[in-house]
Amino acid sequence: MAVLTGAGSSAESGVPTFRGAGGHWQRFRPQDLASPEAFERDPEFVWSWYDARRSDVAAVAPNAGHYALARLEARINDCTVITQNVDGLHQAAGSANVVELHGSLWRLRCVACGAQPLDRRTPMPVLPPRCQRCSGLLRPAVVWFGEMLSEEALAASEAACERAEVVLVAGTSATVQPAASLPLLGKGNGAYIVEVNTEETPLTPEADVSLRGKTAQLLPMLVDRFEQCSTASD
Ligand code: BJW
Ligand code: ZN
Image 1 (cartoon, rainbow, N blue to C red):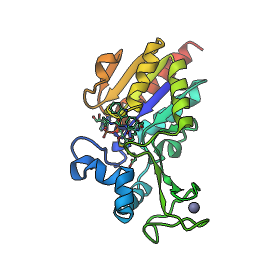
Image 2: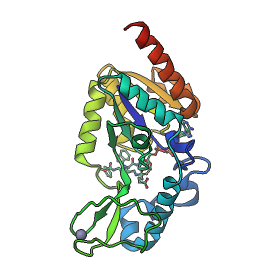
Image 3: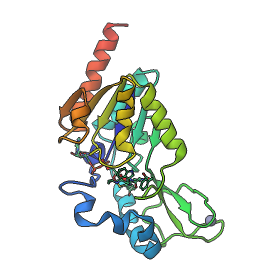
Image 4: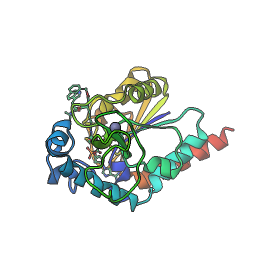
């Protein structure tokens, strides 16, 4: 099984989504914050947004949907969680096989020497932070618009979708590429597509089953049912 998650799956933990009511992109323009040009122009401004988001995420906990996916992984031989989220909440809930397609809020990258230190300090003592090795500017190791995703993360995600019998898509607007195309890769190889979202998305017409509702409510129900069925057939 491959599971693709997006911001909606962390919404009930209190982490804002990007699009839609209350989303980041209602208050800010993506190109002012989530682009390499914005960081070049004003690293302190971009960092102040990331610093606030790191503090907000540090104060929240995984929700029932995250825990349900960790339970699912424990039940299935080959289960990969591919997340577009940078909050680390799947790992905090106990998922071990997680691909962070858009990077992590907790990893930094030096724009000069490429060092990638883990750093969980909230708030950062000085903005923008500097590299301990070479004093270069450190940036969040996340993927901004126009940037390439990590080749390794993308290859692992594609392979997981290509060999999946089921691709579960939870809490993503399925609008940002190449993540949004991953379920179609699975579908092309015969996978059954299940979508869980409070709203319709461009992926809905492609899904075999589309469940309308919140991940923290629906994912535990799905996994409960799966556990009952797999116990019955043991
Ligand atoms: C609930 C819920 C609840 C709410 N329960 N559900 C092909 C065609 C067109 C454009 C492109 C293309 N290929 C590449 C591009 C350009 C671009 C792109 O896709 N643009 C589109 C927007 C048009 N892609 C890129 O630039 C990517 N790079 C790349 O492809 O490089 C090569 C290349 C470059 C340029 C041209 C061509 C090729 C990189 C994309 C990086 C995205 N980065 C961000 C920021 C990450 C760091 C950070 O967090 O700060 O990633 S943007 C933002 O969007 C973030 C998210 O991971 C991503 C996806 O959002 P997500 O997770 O789906 O959240 P929302 O808010 O959109 O949706 C939430 C959903 O949840 C909604 O559906 C709700 O209904 C639902 N929901 N509560 C269930 N409780
Ligand atoms: Zn450095």
